[in-house]
Image (tube, rainbow, N blue to C red; front, side, top):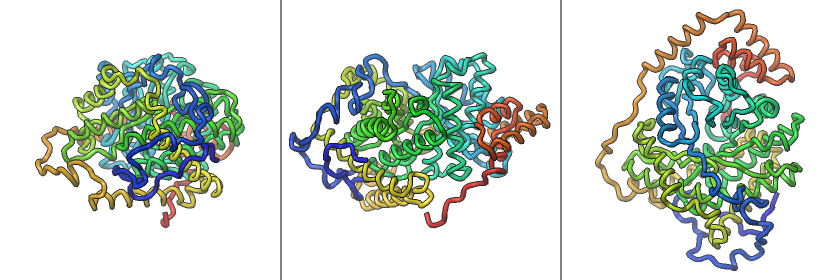
Length: 540
C-alpha cells in the first residue's frame, strides 16, 4: 500500500490524539527532514498527479470554494426560510441536516420518534415534506448536499421526484448525497440494515446516477463523524480512505466501470484544531487517493484520480463554556481547510454546543468564510504552504501511518469484515479515551474549560424546537395517508420487497413508491422485512 518515499513514522499516542503538541514534534524542521522527497513524484505542481498540492492548477483563482452552510430544524417550512436567508446572504450551496427519526428511517408518528422530531434537523417523511423543504428553490440552479446515510436512497428518490415535478432535467442536477453507511457502523451508529445489503443500496445509487444523474455526487465518504467520535487525524485519514476503497471495490464487483462512477465520489473531512496537521492531512489524502485509483484500480480517467472534498469545522471542539471562543476556533479551523484546498466548506456557529444555531449565529459563521475569502488574501496563492519543511514532513508522516492502517484492514479482508470484527471501532474508542484523559488531567488545554475558566454563564439566546413541530408533522402525515391510494402504495412497497430479494436496481421501485406517496418509514420498513435490522456485537 505504501506510496511515500520512505517518510518517518506517523505520530501516535495520547498527545498525538490531543490538541497539545505531540511529543515527537520538534521546534525546527529543515532540508534533512525531506531527504528522498521527489518533487514530481511526491508533490508536483497544483493540478498535476498526484495532486498533493491541489487538484486545480489555479487553486481558488478560477472559483472559490462552495460556502455550503449545514442547516435544518423543525418543519420543512422553517428550514426553507433559513435556506432562503442563507442564499440571500451570499451562501452558494445548500446542505440539509435531517432530524434523528429521518436519519433512522422512522416517520414522525412512530413511537420511537417521540421527543426527537425536528430537534437536530428537519423532519422529512414524505414527498410533500420534500416539496415544502425546497419550495421556491429551483433545484436545477442550486447545488444541494444531503447528510443522510442509511435511508439515503429513499431521500434521494424524494429529491428526484421534486425536481421532476419542477420540470427539471435530472442530468442537470448537481449536489451530493452523503450515502456513507460504513462510517455509521464505525462511528455515528445511525444504521438500519446489516452492512452487506446496505452496501447494495450504495452501489445501486452509483449505477443509477451514472445513467440518470451524471453530475450528482453519489457518495460523500465521511471522515468527519469518525473524527467527531474521537479518532486522531491519522485515523480519520486512514479509515476514510479505506472506506472509499471499499466502496470502489463493491462498485467494481457489481460490474461498474471505475472511470464512470468514481469521478462522482467525493469526501468529507473534519477541520480540527491542530492547524498544520489538518493541512497536511488533506494534502496526504489527495496523494494517497490518486495512487490508489491509478495503481490499485487501474482508473484511466484523471477525474477518478482527483480527490474532491468538503470540510466542516470541528463540532466536537466547540464548548458551552465561553461560547464566543468558538468563533476563534472556527476561524482557525476554516483557514486550515482553505489552505488545505477544500472544495466546499461549512463553518460551525458559536452556539452549537448549546443548541441548534440561531439565525444570527449561522450568519456570523457564513461571514467567517467570507472574510477569509475576500479580506485575508489567502486564496490568491495556490498551496502557499507547499514546500514548508514542517508541513511536508507532517504530510509524509500521515501518509505513511495511513498506509499502515490500510494494510491492516486489507489483511482483515477489507473494511466490511474489519467493521464486523470491531477493529476501527476499538481503535477510535481507545483514542477518544486517551484524549478525554488528557483533558481531565490538564495535559491538553481547552481554553475556558480546564484553563482560563470563567464561571459566569454565557448570555446567549438559543434556538429551541418545541413539540409543536412533531404535532404538525404527524398531522400532515395523517392527511397524506388519507388522500393517497392505499392499494397503489402497497403495490409499490411489494415491488420494492421483491426487488430487494433479487438483483435489480432498487432506485426505480423507490421512485415509484415516492410518487405513490409512500412514506420514508414505510419504504424503510419494507426493506427491513427482507434484510432485517443490524445489531452491533456487544463486545465492540
